[in-house]
Length: 124
Image (tube, rainbow, N blue to C red; front, side):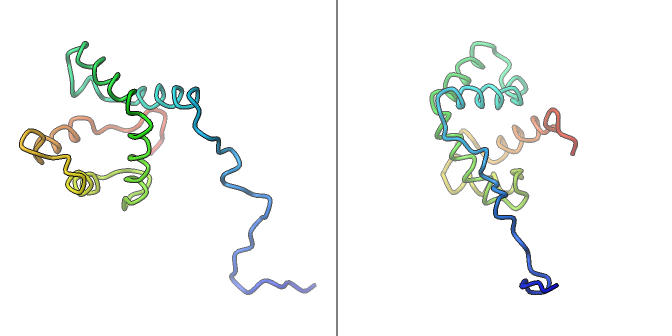
């Protein structure tokens, strides 16, 4: 029996497709992913005031598509893909000029250290 593949070569299954389940974003899919994303939120650990939390949720919802795309751009470039480390986030925040006299490096460190936790349902 003769095989035409080179030794140690990867043989691809032409019927396997990692994008098979991919769907274009629709308002329904975005609403579902927004709710799922916020189910992992540690917002209550950062903002204690309930009306202020609702304001933040509304702001995130208003800009959710942009935030989602921005997150994907950031996470793809991270050393620990698919997780974002503090160094990756800090580099990104400096690149987009997110930090200023109000949002300083020490405040970002404090916020991130205050919300570090294992994601729900994941066995890491």
